[in-house]
Length: 178
Image 1 (cartoon, rainbow, N blue to C red):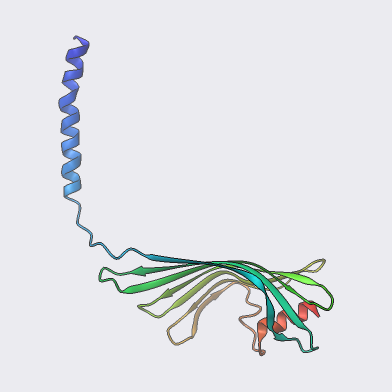
Image 2: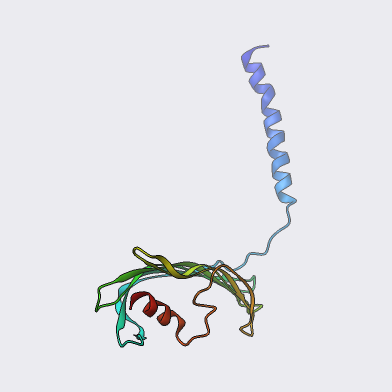
């Protein structure tokens, strides 16, 4: 068989393959297109007072570099149905009297289901590491909160979240730094 004859013989097979593939695509169910998600991003950084004075009168300062990405998802009618917030924060908290500083990173995702009203938070919300001591407190893991504000699921250590004292975040940092 000549090389030309062989190439011509394969063309109908390729054409038949393309027709079969096109027909298969036409049989797929049509999906209603939803409104595409919207995305907002924020970058902030700066120094400020950290949540008021400690019991001994020292007012801690905080320095944060924070990147936030908020994605809103919509249904086919264009109604918002879910908001996903991703936070990456590399902060520090400092005792201005002693100069002692602790890292205060946060890396978490917060998913709010606007239909059911539930709020799902997962990741590292708080962590303080004192040099020479190690991690003195942290909140990490997952929390699911229902529409009425009740915790329906919790996993991971929650030194701040599961604390009944007033201003638990400030109290934990005051204890670590004063």
